[in-house]
Length: 216
Image (cartoon, rainbow, N blue to C red):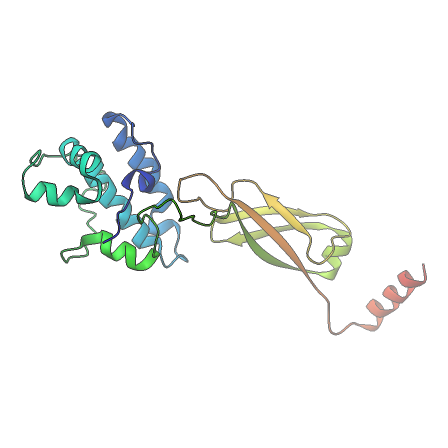
């Protein structure tokens, strides 16, 4: 089983004080909760991994074993070491995501996300995580020419946008911090790409007006 970096999952540095673990979990859970990402098939797995990380780091004795033994901390627990402790309780009382099996959630998370959290070697480089996501929005040709306002719905929420007069197909608008979050908890930008829909059929009046506009 590949090593999972619980600190990375929680989005905190390794020297985070014990008293701050619970508040870090609450903040992180708001980003990963499956109810907030209904269109993300991996949302539940991410939230399960977050709960596993919290269970270990919120228990001072388990955290000490994890910090000392790394990926072998569970074996250290079986063969002595620090013993087991109580922990501080889960803010989601009764919200269990136990997947069962000896490997627990780490095995399941590894199957879904591949090498994420795996061992690092000097010759291994991970591709940079995208800092933005794109969403295509269709607008009619009249709005593209004259401008206007519209409501855009995406996985990350609803936003009111102003379309500038003379908007061209492929025009992009950047919404800072509106594209969800990266694995470290930092926000992504949402890039709106406008697709202009050309009407297939025109009324005689519309055609006459366009012809008049073309002649100037």
